[in-house]
Image 1: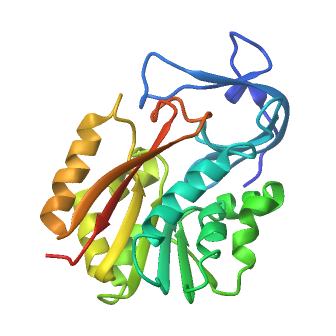
Image 2 (image 1 turned 90 degrees about the vertical axis):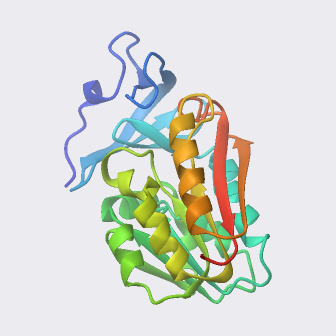
Length: 259
């Protein structure tokens, strides 16, 4: 549902007119952007959703008080998490995106001419609708005829997918709190392994080496048990992700045949 704007929920009381990103995922620090105008604020069945116009990064999408993307630097995240895995295998044809409701990953997947089918499973329809309204250059990915949107739980969706369905799976999740928690756990990656064809690849958001080595170590250990092939770590710079990623985006890539 959409609610009336209450800027005090998100804007720092220490510096009026600024959005401050504060989370238990990065205790003791915060990141702030100057707010020109709040464009949308609502509460879905899963999270608080806000869009504001910043003075330096264009429009900004925020979920539960955490920046998900800005118009100015979203390309770095979307391109990294998409093109690295898709360029590491030959002629990917079927791609699944888990999360990624803003549509940016879809936009980048659609650049690959070999891809014939793009499925996306996003749990929160409000994120999709808000992105189409306020971030049309990002959500343009939904306009590609190869895309099929499935609104629902990505974990449950993967469990029902026939074995060997996808060439690539891209997990564009938020941080491992709330509805995204299961996307970082071993049973989820077991479902990923089952859904991938032999030689397939998965790419996922994987948190910060500076703040979350325990999470990264768990993911790597789990995936080395589940997958044959390589487990690689990559990064790119995203200026508005200084909190859990400390200016870096980290992706874990799993390539090869499930054990």
